[in-house]
Every structure is written in structure tokens, then in C-alpha cells.
Length: 105
Image (cartoon, helix red, strand yellow):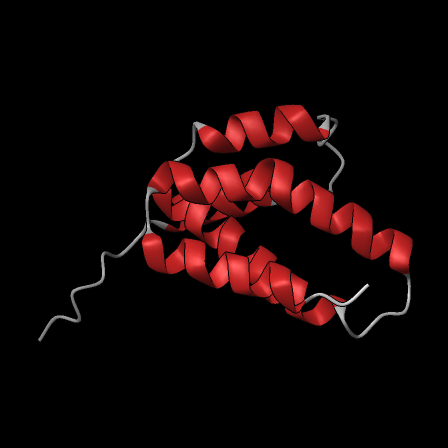
């Protein structure tokens, strides 16, 4: 019996995680370079990034730092929204837009 999910080799999983991480000893990219590289990545990596951002946006209301919230929203609108639109997934775009609207500054 199959689940319909493709099995990814462990090396591919590690490479995806490393590519999506903004931290680490080898990471020295600017935000622009990071998202430019991500735009060229496979759809699964883009979706992981977008779903992670959606989760982070909802969690953003747990902090009381308007500057941090504003910065995060600006980065989301500048880089993550175009990423979602590029993969043309209406459900994902709607979820991202709802998460953006949920942030109270």
C-alpha cells in the first residue's frame, strides 16, 4: 500500500533544510540573494518556506515589538508574497494573505 507521497533521499532533505536556513557557518547571503536563490528552487522548498512564514506570522502576535512586526511584514510582502504567486497556488496565497492580515501592530 502506498501513501502517494514521494520518498525523498536523506541527502535531498538535508540540502533543502540547509538551503532554507538563514543561519549557519556557511550562510552569508543578503536577504535579496537568499530569496533570489529560493525563487530558483524546487516548488517543495518554496512551499516549505511559505508555510513556515505563515506559521511565523501567526506567532508574531505573541510578541510586543512593533518594529519587529513591521520589518517581518515588509519582508513578507516584498519577498514571500511574490514567491507564493510564482508557484500559482491559490490556496497557499489565500493562507498567506490571511496570516498577513492577522498581524496586529
